[in-house]
Amino acid sequence: MTWCARGIISVSALLTAAACGTTEPEYGGGDYESSLTSNGRERTFRLHVPPTITPQQQVPLVIVFHGASQDGNDIRRLSGFDTVADESGVLVAYLDGVDHVRETWGFYGLPAYLNGIDDTQFTVDVIDTLAVTFAIDRDRVYAAGFSNGGLFVHELGCQLRGTLAAIASVAASLTSFVEPLCNEETVIPAVFIHGTEDNSFPWLGAPGFMAPEEMFLFWADLSGCTTGPTVTSLPDVVDNGITVDRHDYSDCALSDRITLYAIDGGHHTWPRSPDFSASEAIMEFFAEVRR
Image (cartoon, rainbow, N blue to C red):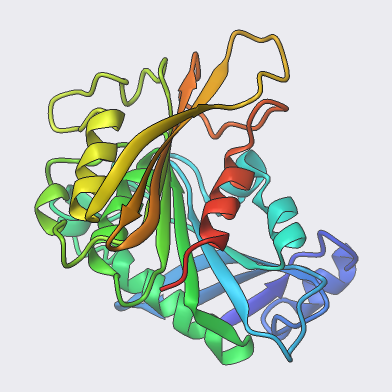
């Protein structure tokens, strides 16, 4: 395994070049790139370390999965999750999918998975690798994904109950391939964020893909929720034709709540605006949930 200090915060380009392969991630803040061997393949990811965490404290970990034709740095920029991580004191790892396959993430039943891309194992390997250096709070490890990465985190939410505390899906859906993996004994708490004008994963659903409201109700039912859904309209800060409603199921046997943020007028993106920040909403949800 190799590490490379990225030099985004305070390390010069010269130092970054010299340190690549020798600099271990450390407390005190910084950004790093790393590679490891998972399931016989060399895999890469990026790590953001907030400046406020210390060796004396257990630290939560959020793993973020990019969309198709992206990499970890793309979703890092799109989501702005570094800022949220610094404010919340959590490590955040941005994983890279495997190139040259149509489905960026190897989730159940699709070509990347059938071609031996085991991204579930990659996820576990990243967690275990980071736990060597940092005091990872194993009860507060979370996964969030956008688009193709959002499709994948649904699978993680139905396969890694003993590893993850919760998932967040942005602009994605539950596929007919993954649905059979999900039942009352496997699902974990989830928050879904979806725009009503999403052309990639339509609000009304598509063959093989659940509509967001259907997915929300499906997950709440498996989680044993008995109260809801209640609907709360968020403040409309900017007059841009987009409003946000938060749908909550509560009194759930397996979760404090299951949440859907419906972005009325929202398109296929990771929302970041004065009206609504997906990253802030996700971190708020994660902060309430432990494994």
